[in-house]
Image (cartoon, rainbow, N blue to C red; front, top):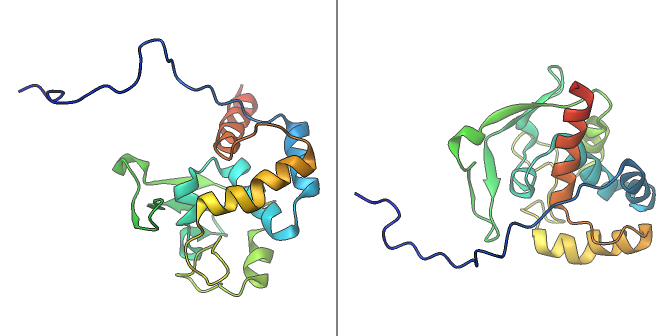
Length: 168
């Protein structure tokens, strides 16, 4: 049986993959300096944890082990605000977080701080619409910080490149 039978390739051979360039430490610092206090925590967490936007959007307080300084990644939210397990299931994992993360203070300030509440919810406590966050908050922040062309996904690459640099 051919598992690829019936699959249509929609990309051109000469198209290549899109390169994601992580921000420099100076660019990230500019973003954090210009961000409001609430959004600064989301940007810093994304740049430190390396989580996909969907996993970040589905993160609940019960997933955070403050004593063990790690988070459990087991769910994600898609563009239709449907929550599911990570894809693939191998994506279920523990990710270390540093003691410097300001999540404890964020939880104390949040209106949504119960175990099953989202860590980064919308104003009503539900799933944040990623496109809205990008258009209304992240892109204006990039302009204000004069950091051109940076995409949210690049924060994941920042985390990973930082881990590689610190382990070598």
